[in-house]
Length: 454
Image (cartoon, rainbow, N blue to C red; front, side):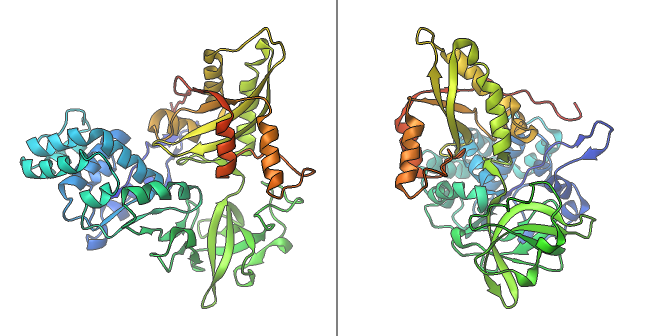
């Protein structure tokens, strides 16, 4: 049961069509006309995968997976976030899904003609016994291990769990009760297929990829000890030839940014991924994916960097000025403790005039303003895909960020070099910030989003 989804094809202002690489693959003959074998025998009918409405697609794919629950050997999605989103969807819709199986009729909310036709062939007759089995499992007070209970023959979960997706490992382990290995098999992007994980059953924290030199020409830009870019190289500029390291010359333990030349025409293209060399397989270097360069926040497909975050907050804080309020300091983190995850901003606000005050509605508007200043992908995930929840601002008491600085200095940081982190990774720091929170406000509406060809 692999859950795959497409996104609607868009077009540029001059009419050139474009779509995501996965959508392009699913719509190609390579996928639709694939030779059937046990490895690609999916529970989801192609019509459900190719449905542009993500809710209808999700409903039909989960329904098909439940109908075939005793035949399912593998669970997965491209990214771990999609599998968590599916589990949350199932938690809301299991009663409807059971009713469909019990009656043999598809819910009327599924209006896509191709989906209805494909699913009605799967729901060929009522199956009250199967519906009772699923209802008994889903109505339990705890959903710990729910994936193992619903699909008892499943051997593992396959999804990308490296980089920003690592934040979804704990909930996946909860829903599988730690019984299903989390398998991350490959390292790839829209630009190029890079490498494979030769030890797919390893712990997710130990995943390393062996690059395949026949997929493209790989070069590496050396980075600092923590993956920082050299000060004399701009984020966007071409890298001088003498700064690049060939695949055979990388050193174990060192950090690099990946640079590729591809068969399709990209020449020394900076992928933006930070990798660390972990060892060798024979003579082939193996790399651990560390992060995307300069990405501060990510919940789903969104990649918000520090510059974008700063720009959006700079716009939003102007709403405070008429009320004699100043934004003293801020930081952020991606809260994935619930599905969908969402961005959280910690704001320390100083009132210039103690006689004035700010109300909840103003701070809610600040939330919306921040979201509307973030990039197209974020707003699409928020407004159309619903894979990101409403942005939240937590107002903290005066002096909170001084306490945060004291914490980092007590852990060995230098007061001369201290800069407020724009994204919080430390659980101790997060606990400190939450303990000083005075109030919380969330976006009351979705940010504006219009398809590029709309």
